[in-house]
Length: 238
Image 1 (cartoon, rainbow, N blue to C red):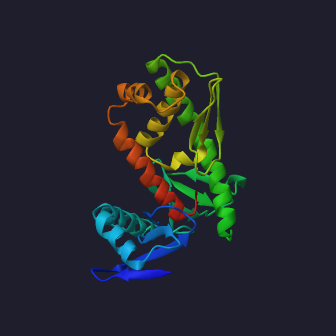
Image 2: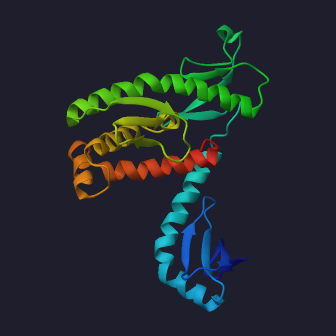
Image 3: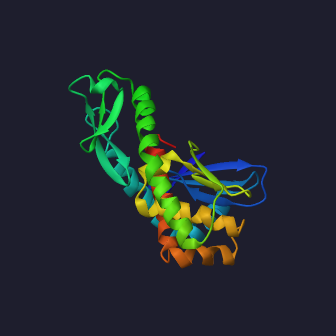
């Protein structure tokens, strides 16, 4: 069921009733609001809920719509752009045989062979990003592990869409190649976060203090991580 609030007619309210005990709401990627409610919830109950929490939803709606507009301004494909280290870089059709590669990073752009489907473009660009990520992640892991006085057993690059970093109890760290599309500040936050887990396998205050000792602005970096995650979802990368 969908509805619109009279004083915010451009925001669509999607109402989903189910066998649950309470009303919850969230802003979905298109900038509208989804409300999940018990089967017996009336429209008046939902309106009261929205009246109570609207001041929290509206800034998120505005931010999501702003980021969606940014993504629309950078379409994917030949002549389009893709994120690398937080910057939008061009995707170009290679003028020659591209040195035998389907895709390569050259002269500040992703050079692709012509006539590739979007799926193939993404596949080969992801291969290039994987290779670009390797030395950057390795250098930052060495730097921050020395700074924090921790030793990780091993590390590897994964391709997880949602869990961008993980640390096992035996000290093995996995970083998703997808975070190479985010800013260096966000990459550093994710790496420091996982290195801190070598000392503290939880998110208690002592863990947060460990991260803050290295990155005093870690909360801003965490927020930026969420924003990049949203943009990459809109772009079809996660």
